[in-house]
Image 1 (spheres, protein in one colour):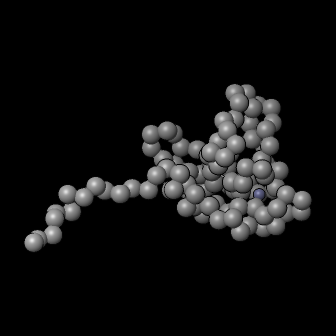
Image 2 (cartoon, protein in one colour):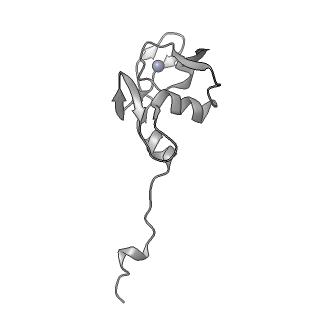
Image 3 (cartoon, protein in one colour):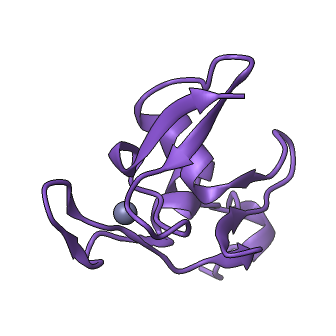
Length: 99
Ligand SMILES: [Zn+2]
C-alpha cells in the first residue's frame, strides 16, 4: 500500500481564535488591584498589539480580545487603557470611554 498523496488530506489550519490566543501570554506585570497584564507576542503598531488577518479586517489586539471576551465596542465609544501598557490585550485592563 502506498501512502496517499498529501493532497488527499485536508489542510489543517488554526482557527482565527487559535491564531489570536496563541499570541497572548498571561504572565505580564502584576498591577495593583487589577491583576497581571497579558503580553502580546504578535505584531505591534504604534505601541499597540496588532493582529492582522484577512476576511474580517485587522484589529488592534486589545480590541480583538475585548470583542472576543466581552462583546462589541458600541458605536461612538472607544477602549481606554487603564493599566499603563497599551500593548496589553487583557479586556478588564481597558474601559469603555466616549468616542
Ligand atoms: Zn494590562
